[in-house]
Amino acid sequence: MSQTSRNIEKIKKFPIKNRKTLENIIKRVKQIINGKREIMYSDIINFIIRERCIGEEYKQLIIWCNYKIRLGKTYVEFE
Image (cartoon, rainbow, N blue to C red; front, side):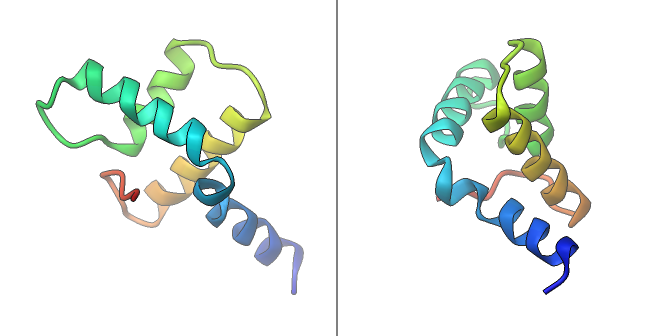
């Protein structure tokens, strides 16, 4: 398996390994959007930047959101 393949697999597993962080951010973003529309991956990225969230977990969350956007996804699909 190439280095790129391993990195992509690691990115894909982010929501599983960091469920609480993702749930917390989605909850806070929902409060901001106030039900006006679905939550977008870009909303999560903007929230992290606006709130100045620092740490490896947030960095990986931004990478995961970016990955989903590059796949053509717009709205967060998270159970």
